Image (cartoon, rainbow over all chains, first blue to last red; front, side, top):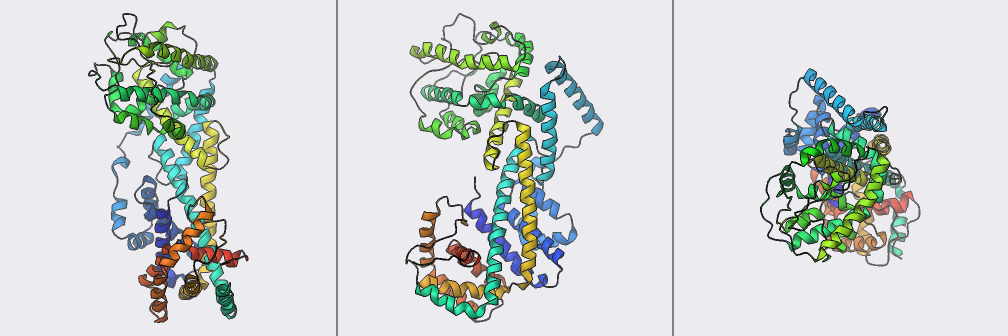
Length: 201
Length: 366
């Protein structure tokens, strides 16, 4: 399963655009600040290139928690920002009383255990706990995953993994490109020779 | 909690499930061919099961292939006497919809098995899990109950499942000669419940298992692992490592960026690609095996990458002039032009960078 070409192209376009817009300010930042700015721009570019998914909304929501990022996001995304931050139909959490929820969970689990595990220690209970733990961990990893149920969580995780992989690939290639161009800038004298050999071959 | 419960059950049976995936494909084809052949099913008469069918045909098809769960059969055995209270005329019916076949085919369970299923789809064997219409004999529903109720042990369930498909196939072949039936009795697997709740649960579990399989294919080294918890472990590790990778790369980019002269980068791109665009078409370009786009065949990809650059040679001229006129390089216009170049030629620029410089083995036009 691969990321689509249009996604990669949109991603690159957004990223380069962000780099150009903020290249001026990059010179006056420290390394750490630059790193977080670049990470932020990469995340924003990825989310905007992907479009409207649960995890993109969650990601943008997480990034907009800080005010300074919010103006940056607004600048980058433009009109999309409003569209993406608007709560979509599935993510409205119905206000529930915690006490009632806890009690109902207890009753449900007791009933389940009585029905299905009347005799002693059941391996399925252990398996269920293990899986639950990992599900919670995955929910914390995938942006916006807290309010998703099992199936949509896996769906979003799938999409997120594909996009993350594309992001890492793209940044890697961009890095080699920049480093190469830096090298060439340093060795400008040899450039005509290279060009000649280029054409002559 | 439904999802957790389904995970728990799936964990224990995932091994059995994997080996059985070949079996359900045949039944799915049978059902599909049956549905295509029948167009005048009488309207459904009652029963939550039919409502379930009307609700989502995909789930219904998937229900028939669900591997049994020990716990489910135990609870089902407890609740099945109530199921017997159905009237004799009760019959589940597939909605008379030819589109059902397509929907069934698009059911995610068959994503992995899609090619074999679809390639041999439409096999004309009208086998089905059906009782003859004039069955004064007991309807299919009590049949699972007649079988000896076993304790909810997984091994027994697997034995039942192994026998089940064979038994059903035999009975199906018996009815091959029968004419098209006015309604279809859907027979559940041996030892399983046809309770609507458990069916819905089973359908959900099917969906989740399908997604898990996709994730397993995605994460490297995960296809050999059986068991939901371990697979989830691997997925979590993979996501964490990807996130760490992105952070590390952003730090390296931060180290490189201040010394990047974006203007210089532009002119470099122009300089490098101008002569190349002029001399294009001559021979192969030995591209890096790490290809930019998701081309599975880099050999063929090379050719197609060169050709667009021929056509877009005019695109080179414009930004070259743009740079020479000293336009602001931080404006969106320059970014647009660079992007245009990169896109028009499907990033051969980046290819050549990585080829020629970082790998020191550039072997351009032969």
